Length: 202
Image (cartoon, rainbow, N blue to C red; front, side):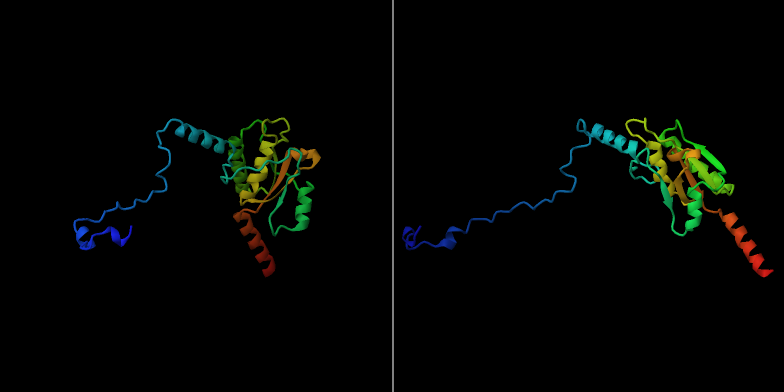
């Protein structure tokens, strides 16, 4: 369009006098969950329950983490920093007296967890230092071979009372059982401190 298309007396301001500016709607932000499927949509709750059930089935009840599978024939070993090397060597060679034993055969994961925690607590109350946990190898356990053995290897380091563990010698069950060394109880530690103190004073 050129200037020749308008009459000589055309006034643009007059022609726009009755035009009102267009009011645009205020922009609305979407909340983070505004596009999520409604709670009552068919299948949503069912899928959520199924996913939760799967997580709980393989979740470690001590830490909340998933348990890393251990080969049924694997050698288990763990030692906290500060434990003397010669003490750990004699321990893993089965040279210390076993003062208590726990057999986990035939238990579910949940039952085994309760038994282990209760067993360790009871041993600490009675100042027991060296124990044996018989968990089996689990070669035939399907669909997760070595499940209880994996749980034992995963749980024990989470218990503050456990100083070390190692797969047992053959005459104590081999890789189907585990030696566990417990720390001294507070009562026993205090007794040792008093005994050492009295020895220095004499």
